[in-house]
Length: 630
Ligand code: PRX
Image (tube, rainbow, N blue to C red; front, top):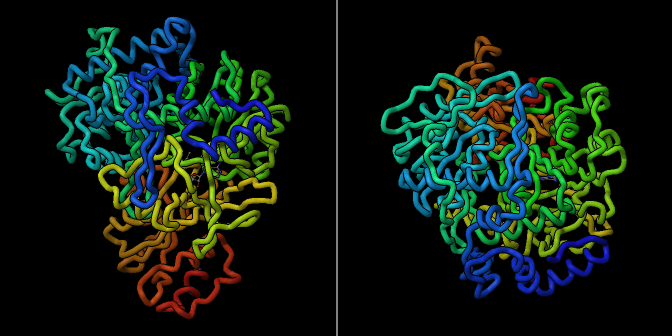
């Protein structure tokens, strides 16, 4: 395997991977279990756009996670489950047990009539059964579509309908800090509008009262009991669908990113081992939720395919107190810890004693993902958590990329705070100027990728046209990331944030259009515009400018109604932090909202709003400025 262990390795291997990508990826892929090897490593045309990897190869990803590691890892812990409440016992699931559980789910799905290619929606808390559900789908070739358990019924409807799920795997409820989320009743509400769903299997987690619909709903615990421990893996083509995962887009409708079996497996495994420099026996903890790509790739597929021990945490960083993460690290002797800048910033606010009372000496590598990390948070993390001795890998990637693309390699790449540093092998970034010309050397522009990589999303489910338009039309022949980026004289990359209508709130990707359309559902609202603003903890907050049909009589009441509505339609993560009622929006004569102006107002910087004379009604800017919410 072409794993890098030194800077010289990096230089050589990176060079080889660019000069001969097929040979490079062919060698990496050679370590896995294939039922048939590929006829061709890759094929691509970025104009269509189409990319395929390991053409003609056959595999089942769960054989590479489970069967391949047995019997040697029969008694090695694959998953350490740490519950929401520290008083509850953690669970340790060995590779042997994981295989049996995954097989039981696979058999259950087959018994229920689920076949290769069928879509199964998974809406569950962070419990081991969620992992069994995901891998159970993969075992039989069903396509999993995991929906984050913090999303509301409206978001669930969109996601189930878009890909026509036949089945939902869920739980009665989820524990989240001191709260309980009634998942089953959210599913019930959603399914009224989802005729494709025939069956629902409910895992009992919270003991919440659930109404079970006869003929549709059954209990997981009852169903799983009689299932066999062996389940023959469905033999998949490398390009068959493994999963769909929805991410926000610039229009209201989320995009179902499609990932396929072969390339995704190879890439998540390779990047896991390379970036974190994973060594046999280490305990790895990625704090993300499996509802997001980070959890898919670096709680499940990357670490488990590498035979690692992966921690699965059900709770939140602040419950029962701000020492929870550090307690878990101490309890399970975590070696590699991977989290989000927003979590670091929120924990940084708490007294340092929460950190100091725990023994963090097991830590060897730290990582971050999801948004740019500010310098202060980086240093706090380095000094207080890593004790100045753990490299921090600031990993840049996306739902669409499937795995890490630009990142330091732990202990190998010299670090530079706030820089994601250098591209991984096989990754070819391009910095583009506003005229679509590639910038050479140091500079600032938009980040594109000019060569395919194995885990790239293949399409948007059911909408290849949108895939082409979103990612491949800005810079023809290249993949456009939507991110702004700076490159320094050493070739180091620093991601500066989104340049489109997506905002990243607490590491969650939200489309402003999606939030606007849910605000507009309020009967008093005529139109709205949403932008991000800098937020100390969340990275970005949501600022909504709202026009009402009539000036609101009780502004605060309307604000809270709007917040509740957004929370109900999308989920609590999308609730606006600030709502300003305005008489109009700054629009051009062609009706386009000048978001640049709104962003400035939201940032509290109205000293130079640029040229507003081209606006339909320049006076509205003054009124908006006056009413800005601090
Ligand atoms: O803007 C970039 C930001 O997160 C976006 C992707 O979001 P999502 O698809 O939800 O995936 C998040 C987890 C991989 C990117 O377009 N982003 C991600 N990682 C970083 C980052 N921004 C700066 N630095 C990072 N390390």
